[in-house]
Length: 174
Image (cartoon, rainbow, N blue to C red):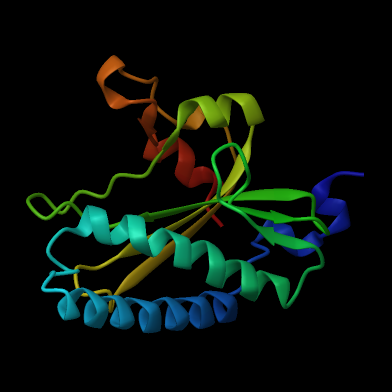
């Protein structure tokens, strides 16, 4: 029995708008706490979006796993190297979480992944949270069954990271 027979709503998404809304609200609260904590030590949390997104990615995994766990059994949030960011036992699905923002100088949005991980797994679901500079505007994209064919080939200087070929990947966006 394939995944679509076990869960017919998967044709759209197993992540609902309500789950997204609640997870984003929790992430925003965490973000505000980080701004205050960084300020307490004389640091600007908003000054470097890349660093901000690295810190915020753990909250993405935590809060989305909690929301998904309200609807599905056996949700595990791990995120360590080699482990699924979120695993949903009931659906037998691995979900990779990615946090990104538009590039300040161009506005371009890069949706990347680790080529080796995707090669080993074969296919994975992805949840890209694209956050505005002030962390008040968001676009959340959920992809099912992305493969290495949906991404560019790795370059020697890219440290294993590959960019999505958007016209291919978007066909799998729910």
